Amino acid sequence: MDMLESPILERPAYAPEICLQTHLKAVSRPQRARILMVSPDYFCVSYAINPWMRLDNPVDVARALAQWQELREVLGSQADVVEMPGVEGLPDMCFSANGGLAADGTFVHSNFRHAERRAEAAWFSEWLRRQGFAVRRLPSSVMFEGAGDALFDSAQRLWFGHGQRSDLKAAGLLSAMLDTQVIPLELQDEHFYHLDTCFCPLASGHVVFYPGAFTPQSLEAIRFFVPARFRVPVSREDAFDFACNMVDLGDTVVMHRASADLRRDLNGTGHDVRTVDLSEFIKAGGAAKCLTLKLN
Image (cartoon, rainbow, N blue to C red; front, side):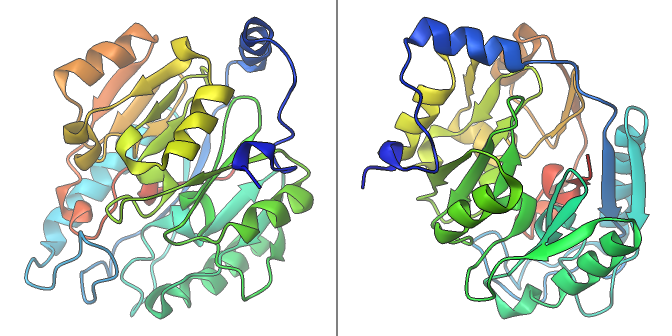
């Protein structure tokens, strides 16, 4: 079955100008974000499960802590940041986006593909349960790596990355579990192993993405669901600087680095750009968005 014919997508049968009107109606000023961050006390690169991780390129722990603290302060100026302690022996737990997916009081527990990260999910689920979230889980045989691969847009559609870490089968299960439309996007480049490393839907309705990370069929889906004026493609240079791995705070976006061209493009959509050096975390394959989990 062609991806755009999938019942998950419920492809609308109306003209592009009507699609644009629908897209515009979905755009609203977001509420103040509540963001979960995990202290990187135990962060290091002690194994290699993606192309960014190299055992011969160790983390400067003191510098990583300083970078994380700066990110926390920048986000805290416009969002409510809550902290969860790290766990010894789980060095990637600071990448809280992968712990699960929070949506309307429900937290969907992650099923990590790599054994090195599987123990993280239970810690996140227990912490969120204590915060009042109803914890749900997909079948253990279905790989799902949380908000790293599942991103809501301004229309409350869930964009879902698969092909590297999460399984396509999870898309239909999430659609039923959360009663929402899910749009699968297949990732084809191992450097962009989670959707949030190459795709970011903004509350303004714009979508920032790196075309080279996606299959032709997935690019067709992006073009169909996102009107041209709302698409912000980034260069390979920006993509490899984790520019798409940004945190959306409404009028402000926060990321590791942005080229002059990308700054101009984002300023043109009404966004201020804040950058925070997150080079130590990029050694493990993550940046600003990876270090955060939005709870609302």
